Image (cartoon, rainbow, N blue to C red; front, side, top):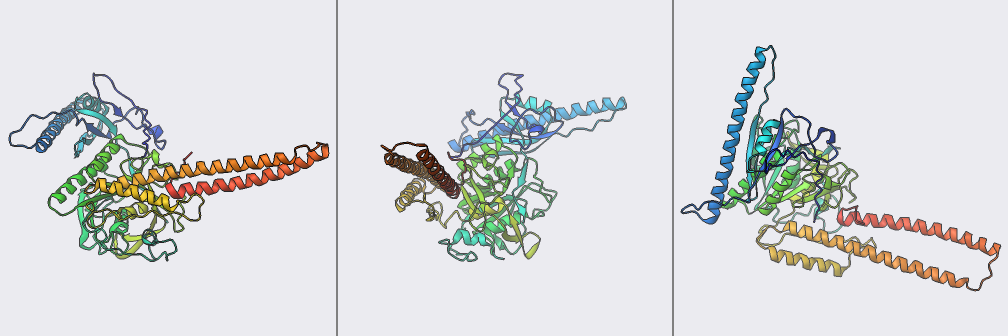
Length: 541
């Protein structure tokens, strides 16, 4: 499992008993993956997370236990939101009085707007809201017993870069590496009865998607609910487009978080995740969808406790989330959402199956998929296409191949392969052993979301096997060297040592040492290559 790196330099205002912590993002630390104390902030966006585990609802006549819990939880959230609205109204009146006083003294002060953008409830364990608040307001909110913690919102960005056949489809569908890289092996059915939620810049209504596109939440109501930026349509085309896509029969649900300039909406990700949960719940109730996948081809410059908690509850609700690892050639464990243990994090490879030089890597990357120079749909052209590179292009390749027709009542398609050109390759017995583990997980999770459990178990098994093989190789090499030293020593037993004999030994030793060093360097490079191909983790020691 992934270890989530949560490096926090936090400012806890403990002015009252039981006050909730407030996490500020220090401007000086932006890009250094840390959270710290903000010296001053006239107006910033914050996520307020509420407590959800200590509410014992009163019994309601005629309600089942589940309905009763849901009703009381909603009442609890609504009551808190009413309190916040009242607080902001009082603050507004106070600010107005203050402005009137300053104007009388000939001073004009620009008013600060405080507001709640949205409230969200994800499953049973995540509830909260996003808004713009001043520090004084934050302190008052933090003193409320309903509040678990407050976090300044983490800014998101899209993971792609500008750089015709889509070789990505061929790479993920070919039965072996020798197949023509421009051939896609279409397998029936492909995404039928699955909803793929594209949380991005929107998706354009073009013939690539036909009647399978549904326009969902729009975080920018002042803009039309379509793609005015290019990114979302390209990603949707890879995941489920008719010509360029993997899951060609899946429903595509557009969830717009980025505007025409690639700017994320305030409180966008938390709000979008909450909307997806409710929409999926409603679709299942109507018998319209059986499985759901969320594609997040986006990244950040740090970590977020709130995002991680929300994604954990998405997983608990049986919704798979696939995210891109990022494009900074850095450790993916430093960034949310790639570092989250409840998502499938995807790095990028190129046409030659090599890990792309710009993709993020490390033990938080679960799998690699094609992401270099990927052709897909163009947002403003019915017949056009666009070539992009980035881990954003890798994530939808995985999003589209996750389910079979009757998933989760039947197992998804999967295969375990090995590289026969590497000394540490898997044996057939080891592959069969892992297949057995996969079957056990499938049987234990039949009827429930199982793909993340399968991916996590497979990754752990591969890591364990690789470490074991490296240790065995080191042991064999050590035994070989010890044996050679012993044989070499026997050659000289009883030999009279003179200056001439000693110089001959020295010359031979230096020559042999240089040869061994060269071979050792080759072995290290070989093993490092294998570590990347099997696990995507360059940090195994």
